[in-house]
Every structure is written in structure tokens, then in C-alpha cells.
Length: 471
View 1 (spheres, rainbow, N blue to C red):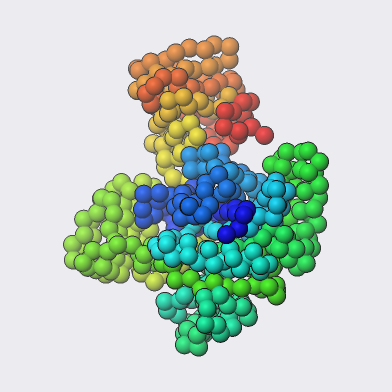
View 2: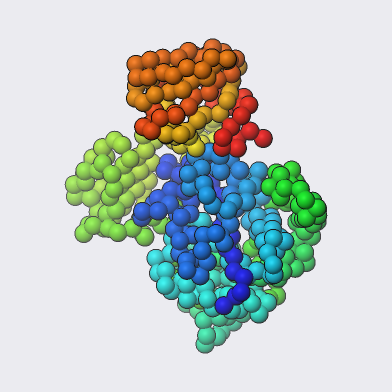
């Protein structure tokens, strides 16, 4: 066993193919899709007891750490990206940080945050083998034993071996069905899982060799944080200079020291609603049903409701997913195309359907948009948890009127600080610096009426914030 073992969990994806449940501001890795925990929490949990939480580092977007995913990330070691640059820069920075801040050369396990692994004991057995191979100076990837000719995954071809560890011959992009079937028939082909194990020095050496543009920026950043600058500030300042490239394309496909551990671990990348349906527990008719659903004579379908009743009769092989502001309908087998819906919503500027849910989580609580028709006003229900406090802020385009319906609010408006109880109200004029707090022991609930010529969430100028949202 390695004397120094660390883990890096990549949690920066958008999860667009699981819309409408997954949104840009709260993607699938922070959601609970088929269990008690979020996918991120489950990913960290399956590393124990080999790697405990204090030795796990989560690479994610800076916006996630101070936005809807705050509660999932709070208390974890985080490396925050100010912008997306794919997996190679994220892995390069995490390996350099761990090497520079550890007494030694750690073996690093790299896992995506948004995968499901059903066979946890088998996963840990594979992980132990991978760590042993990595300690010998190899780059190790997990190759998933294919269950069929899947066209949604990349493949890895290996040399024939009687053991579970194989030398890698080549990586293959997502194939068509005929090619996938031929690879399955030939054998020695595995699904590319995107899970890796390597020593920090080894992967950094390969990055220097094959990705000189990444290496040049990384060296500049390392010089700065090793000279005493705060490494998160260095990343914020320089990360956008990194090229946008994946570790597979940049290193894995070129490296001559790649080994593969054969893994039969009940794995799914949960890349679509079809994958969710395949992994889920089903009733006697092959349906996966959750939420407020009435299904009569339905077969082989996925039916999920968060709020409204889905009443279905005689459906076969249909996906229906309801959230309070959107409904997805498609055939089983077509859910990879959900990304086309998200792309269309972005291009057409169709509100915030691709960005956030009707109820938006914040570090201090949540808000729910009750009415927003671009008519110069917006209605919200706001809930502030005990001890929660919004940022000290001002709006240049809207006034706000708050009516407390439960709990007690502490309202700062200009130089005035007052306590507002149930049935009480407070008015915030345009441009006035203000803050809302819940100093009580019970949740605070209020109704907010915004009036103005622009009501976007970006009309916020923050002057102070408990949760680090002021740069």
C-alpha cells in the first residue's frame, strides 16, 4: 500500500443530458439520482477506508462553491476553477498542488464525480491493484468490462494477459454499432471509464512531455504559489491561460507507460436518462417510477415527477421527467439527444430553463420564483436557514418589498437595522445598501416583490459576504 495516498474528484461537468433535473448551476454530480447521497458524496464515500475524506480534493467550478452546490461542497477540500478548461489542466494543477504540499510523492486516484459504482468491494479490490501498479511508475486506468456493444463510450484495446492488469495498445473514440460489436467479439477491449491512478511525479512528467503549453502555464503558477502567494488566487488569476484539452487526448493516447486494470464493478457514467433507467430498480413491468406518478398498463418506461401528477396510460418505452418548470418526453433510446434541447434553449435565449430550477439553493437557504412574466415585477418566496445571512448588497434597477410569513428577520437598510416579525414588512429602495439575516433558531420565510425595469439575478453589487462571493 502506498505510504502517501490522495484522491482528486473531478466535479466540473454540466450534465446537460440529464436535463431538466440537471441544470448548469446544479449539474448531476450534486444530485441524488438513485440513492440517499449525491453522486459526489457517493464517489468520496466509496474510497473509504483506503482514502478518507480529508485526503480527497474536489476540483470544481468557482461558481459551484458559492452557488447552488454550496451545501455539497462545504467542508470539503476544494480546488476551484474560475472557468472550464477540460480535464488536463484540472489534473495538472491538482497533481502539482499535492506534490508541492506533501512530504513525498503521493499516489493520486482521479475519479469523475458523476459515476455510479454498484460493486463497491470489487471497486476497492481494483483500486488496490491500480495503486500497486502506479507505485512502480506506470499510469493506470480502469477499463470497464463491457456488457455489450455500447456506442456512447470510448474503448481501450489492450494486450492479451492472464492477469487483471494489461498493457494498453490504443484508445478508440466512440464507435458506431458495427464497430462496437466487432470489438466485443474480438475481446481485449474495454470501456474507457475516465478513472486513473498515478504518482504525482509520473503524470507531471508526462504532461511536461506531451502538453508543453499546459506545462508552461503550470510552472509559472507553481513558482508563484511556492513563493508565498495564495494558490487559489494564483489559479483565479492564471487558469484561463491554460489550453482547453482532455487528459485522454493530451496524454493517455500518447503515453507509452499506460496500464489498464480490468474492472467489473457495476459501473455507469449515468450519461443519459437511458443509463439512469438501466441502472434503476424496476417494477414487475420494467418501469422505474418515482414521485407523484399514476401509471396504468405502462411498460419499460422511466416516469419521474418532482411536483405535478404524471398520469400515464398504456405507455411503453417512454421517458417522462417532470420538474416544477419543465417536462421532458422522449423515447427510450433517444435520451442522448436531450443535449440538443439544452443547446437550443441556450441559442434561443429561452429564459433560465437550462441554467437553474424554479427553486434555487443558496448558501444561506433558497428562493423560489413564484411569478416572473417580464412585466416589470417578480414574486419570490425566500427561505433563510437559522444563522443564514445574505450578502451586503445593492440593486441598481429594482426595489424590493419583503413580507415575513414565518420566523423573524433582521433587516439592514442603509444606516437602519430593524427586526421584522411575522406579518411585518420592509421596503428596500433602488440603490440602497441592504442585508437580510436570520438570527433566530427557526427558518425565516418571506415573500419578496421586486419592481423595476430589469430583474435579472446579476443586478447584485456585493460589498460583503459570509460565503466568499465577493472577489
